[in-house]
Length: 342
Image (cartoon, rainbow, N blue to C red; front, side, top):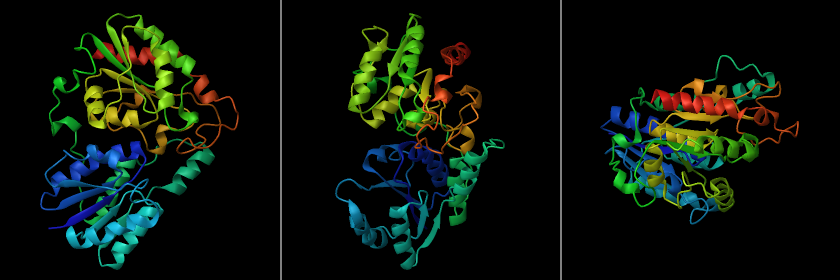
């Protein structure tokens, strides 16, 4: 029996993409135990995936701040008896943990993020063929560690109750078609202009059979979402809820409109089709949603795009052409195509 430590601390979307991989690997290696080391806020993503999957919360902004996270090493070695380390993050924190574990005789592997390939794609703007997906890179790392697997994961709620009663206090009973709108991401270069988002919501809300749910987390985001709601009875801004309840709510949507952000990946975990809007980044870089149809990606192709892997580089033009040139009609058409198919 092996005890496998899996490290992935951030970002939210990248952690969400790890879920199908961990569940698939663990189910195909039932005699081994898998421990996911991640931030406390992300642990609900893994808590109900399988009998041989556990989480280890690493509070890098609290008690494990600075070098104090290395204090977990004795627990990993002595109490849990870790035999393998699968570093799916490959940043300074994870490197220090895996190097320490390697010195103590554990087998250690780490992800190949394809940094040079991605840099070359950004520079050349040659987008075909697409680069290896992040999910495949995760799988490759497990195979290198001695745990080969195929993706068998389908839906997060295959493994736990998804009764509507769990969200009845935050939403009315489902009637008609439910549409999610998640207009924010971490970086401005990935955000569709808010006035265009408002136009999309206006047009969708005119259909009385549609109910639109707005998703966003921070205080500023909630303020902007309140403006988008603007008194419309069929536009709902849910109260602050935990990650598990948010997944429950998302799972009852018929379609999600999202940026290249964590919400695309959360919807993917519960088999909800996503109309994803792409600006500075590009699906060919390997971060497209799990099992999502590439036909539902909305994007234009100015010659400066993509300009970064993660969207963290300021717009060189200053006008966000990749986003402002996306017509609201295109988004509405893709949403309606999915709704009519459903």
